[in-house]
Amino acid sequence: MGKFDHLGIQVRNYAVSRGWYVNALGLVVDFEKPERGFGSLKDDAAFALFLGEVQNAPASTGAGLWYQVADVEAFHRDRTAMGVVFDHAPQKTAWGYGAQLSDPDGHKLYVWDDVTMKTKG
Image (cartoon, rainbow, N blue to C red):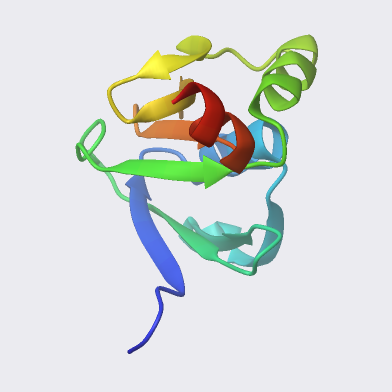
């Protein structure tokens, strides 16, 4: 048995998407080649999100990313205060309890935490 290590998504503008993931989620740049429109961002668990700029990249592929945080309500409150725009605040959804946001290309990100998923989901 293995584990997922990284995921690559197509973006229309590498610099814009890079900035969004760093600011909105707090990911850190692992490596990048901005002149090629490519880079890797990592989360606290070393999962890598590869961003690759593609001319005429489609708006969202329809895939979603679930992003686990320590406290979804605090994350939402803190990021909203920083100017991050959410599609919706933490709430009960079809998949459980959490918040939703969209990156600049329309890829959906679902933010959740273990405690509220068990108690409110």
